[in-house]
Amino acid sequence: MAIAVAGVCYSSWVLEFVLPLRLNPVRSFLSELDARGRADAWVFTAGDTITGTLTLVAGVAGLAAFARRRLSTVGWVALACFGASTIADAQWPLRTCTPDPCPPSHDGLFPQLHQIHALTSTLAVTSIFVAMIAFSAAAFRYRRWPMLRHSGLWILLLGSGVTLWMLIADNLPGNYALGIAQRIQVGSMSLWLIALAVQIWVAERTVSAAAPAPPPASGEPRRPGTRTRPS
Image 1 (tube, rainbow, N blue to C red):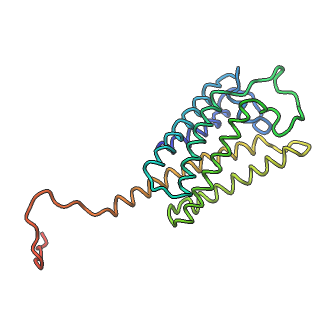
Image 2 (cartoon, rainbow, N blue to C red):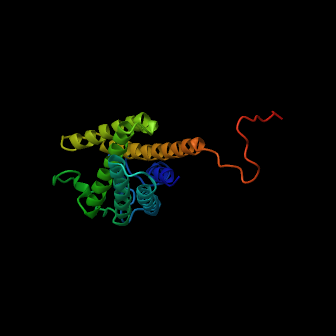
Image 3 (tube, rainbow, N blue to C red):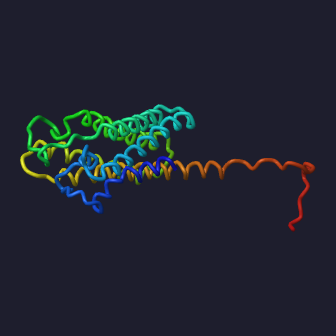
């Protein structure tokens, strides 16, 4: 449940379409939504903080509750790292430029994010992709969690595709809708977190249903060979 709530809260950026933020989603990055001095920035800061806290707790709890297998252990550790990085990402927001928007720059990859926020964002994205890859590989390797072998895999491919789009397009002249690409990327992360939560819930229900029923608290044991009459 915590992971599902984290996935929903990580989609708080969709509120940009109902709040008067006056940002162009084609050109703007999501980090600009909760930048210092932005109106309603607290909404997106709260969403990321809740996401980070829940995934950090879920990652630690997953290490304690599930069997220690190499790939799944990597997944839980990466999920916890994603949570910690997302909390830091929310607490060290992007600094706004004066004048706004930021003037163009040519100092490398995503120059408008070259602040402490750049490091936390990079760590968060890297961690969640490591978790997605590790859990997907574990689902195939250990023949479990079929939802991650199907829906989860397609979500991973979608997120990887738009990430490649961002990395290539940022180094080309012209506008390649990097804002849209990032929104698809983060949306795929949210969907994957929800898929992971649903898969864990389904797996736990299956295990509970397959568990043998406990013996009766009282009553005489049935003798071998005797049959009970239907009522």
